Length: 257
View 1 (tube, rainbow, N blue to C red):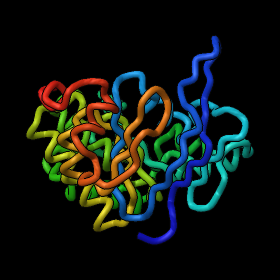
View 2 (tube, rainbow, N blue to C red):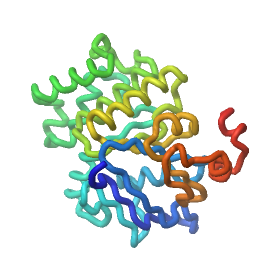
View 3 (tube, rainbow, N blue to C red):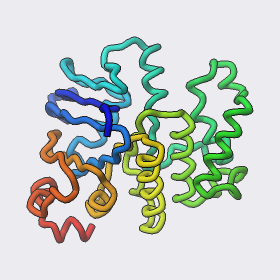
View 4 (cartoon, rainbow, N blue to C red):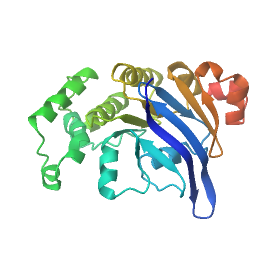
């Protein structure tokens, strides 16, 4: 798989009031991998993702390395450069609905522009061409100039993935990317994420509620419980007993969700 794109060591996060959301979390993600993070609500999955993209600050002693660069405790300028390397895909899409699909994809390039150019949306011809190509790639060639408010959930999420890709990221974080979608749209999105990790070599770390989806698509699964990693292995190693332990429920109850 090559060297690790993401290396997390001893990651902990304690919120005010002494709530331990993450406890000594350590794992890595390599180029070309699709790694799913599973666990109950409140297990620490979203906090983990917010720490990786530095939306919240982890405890002292934590280490998050992206492309061999430590990201904790660095300057704001260096942090901006790190964020350019991390594409984000959100459960609720995080799009500007009054803008077109094309304009939303181009927003993924704003980190590369000056404040003035960003404010005036002065994109280069090269970036516009790349945005068009990505929308074509995701089957949205007829929807480029549709306002995002007029797109289906699955189409919105494809726009969100295209926006992440136009950053030229080294890593894509997907925070419950299919939670708002029906089964068919979910399959389309997961197929694209799998293809991105394999054909482009961009690793995807995916926060998932659906255990069956994680089993079908992941190269590796991280199981979290009460802020700790309690499983880190291949889908074939994730036994029914281990799933039951992660969720504190019987396997039939989990797979029925």
